[in-house]
Length: 83
Picture 1 (cartoon, rainbow, N blue to C red):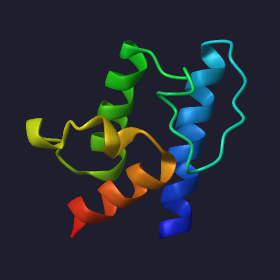
Picture 2 (cartoon, rainbow, N blue to C red; picture 1 turned 60 degrees about the vertical axis):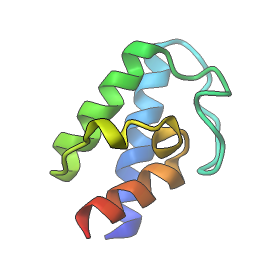
Picture 3 (tube, rainbow, N blue to C red; picture 1 turned 180 degrees about the horizontal axis):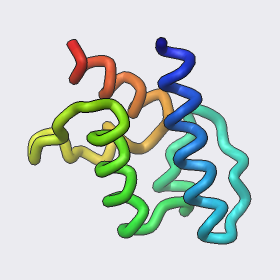
Picture 4 (spheres, rainbow, N blue to C red; picture 1 turned 30 degrees about the vertical axis):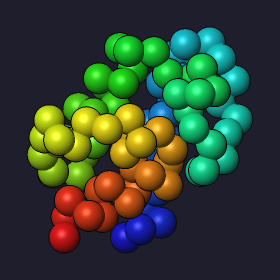
């Protein structure tokens, strides 16, 4: 399940940054915000995607940029929310 979740997260990010016409080369520990791969619109799309794809609720307290800054952080966030 973890491999499939990681793959879905990576594919979502890659497909969306390609829409921004930037190269989609990054590893699972690289901060996509610091790399300049993410704009504010994408950040909201990412939050919505995580909620709908993984059937979890992202609360105000969860909206820490660290939770969504890397593929691995998103994966860990989803794992924690699912219990």
